[in-house]
Image (tube, rainbow, N blue to C red; front, side):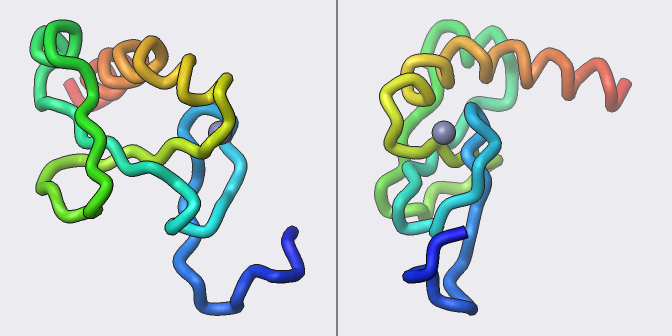
Length: 84
Ligand SMILES: [Zn+2]
């Protein structure tokens, strides 16, 4: 837990390492609705954090940024399986 973190600062979890960070330190990505689109277009970064759709947050660590495009496909497939 960071001592510099303000109490009511929005915090989000990095989907790759599952650590929590202040939202402003994370990059938001929006993913297409279907895994087919995701595999062709990939997740779209949303620096303004305003795009509609399901957002995923990734921290600044290179290993998280590397892992994210690959893992997000698996994550979406899993989520689909859960809702059917
Ligand atoms: Zn991370």
